[in-house]
Length: 416
Image (cartoon, rainbow, N blue to C red):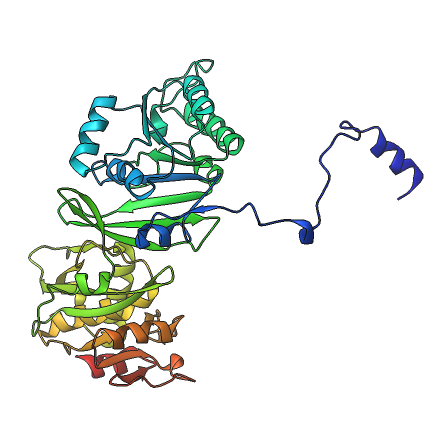
């Protein structure tokens, strides 16, 4: 370094008191602690357990079960001291919910407070292993003039809780609200500040709930855990594919089974389609559990490349069980279900469809095809239609016939 540059650096603020960089080889992982809840679905989503010193955000629609899940946490961590801070309910209401759920541990401490300074003071005094705040939109800092729930209050309150989490080395869960379109309420920086963003999904009219990790610094993203909502709380579903396919009807057109990868887990679900002649000038398009814009694109490909007159028909698509699918690998299943309903010809009841559909009508290869096919074979299906590009190097599975297709018309000839 030149002498004049070294002199300028020496005059910079900080002096010799600044933090010293550490070599990667000298970083110790001995202090990494994960709290195992014993609930396989929850631990899977968290990346193997709740990381000590982590800040986690749990968001979902009102009434979906966020507070229920957090109230049940002491049951799974009976040896950990848990502080539950409620800003929306009284401690009596929380106790009533805990009694209904069968939570009767002395390690759960309750605090009804929304002032961040008072919450931090109580947490420093108690030093809990797990801190739960329900919800972050109710917190406020007295020195900030805006109302609780505003962008400034949410940002500054979260920053204070983040510092507290690192100071006392506890695992913190922030319960957050969502807007009408399903996004997390508050500033976007809120999702950047936390270590884990958990989305609690599900249809209020269905008993199943899906806990999805949208962001996870300590595990795989887009990992899911499946729970069933009962009167006495949430119960994990160890084999969700069997549950989602339990009520599947056979011999009816418009029904197709697809295999979607949710994080590291293959999930088999049923896609239902109903195609009827339109009664209006503009045909209706409705999708539940599937992106409506992508459905429009797939219908355009089906009409342009295969000659199906979709512009003269209403199309309704539903993913059974209240699951939401966003992976392109389910495209071929959606197109097959629509074509099956259009022609009123059922698909094979023991067939699973996997593949991404391109605008040119080509079937594109998908990732982790062997993992998907192992799940397909395990559940007793006998036939799978996959992209031809995935056939190379594929090991045969006993009892499962695998056919490949590189074009949409070839796939439909095999299926419909």
